[in-house]
Image (cartoon, rainbow, N blue to C red; front, side):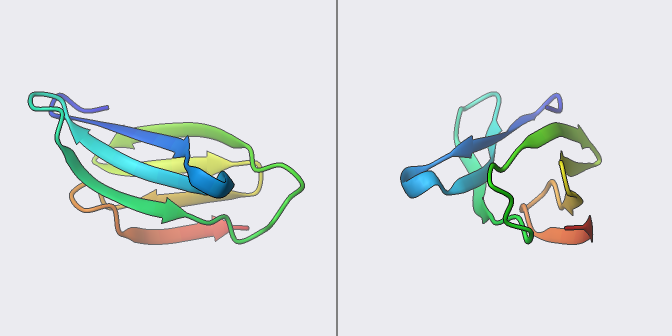
Length: 79
């Protein structure tokens, strides 16, 4: 979370995972993208979601970085 936006990872329909950002003042969804881990483990386990300049998401098998402004993926390490 920043002082202007909250970023969330949630499970949507059909067990798909979505990464989204919401404006804290208006509640408006700023962006939303499906998140597909590249390694399919029996259970997808997000470990930590950190927002500090960009969005960093760690799972059991990878570190993914996303642009805070629009949610585009910048890079992935592992997975």
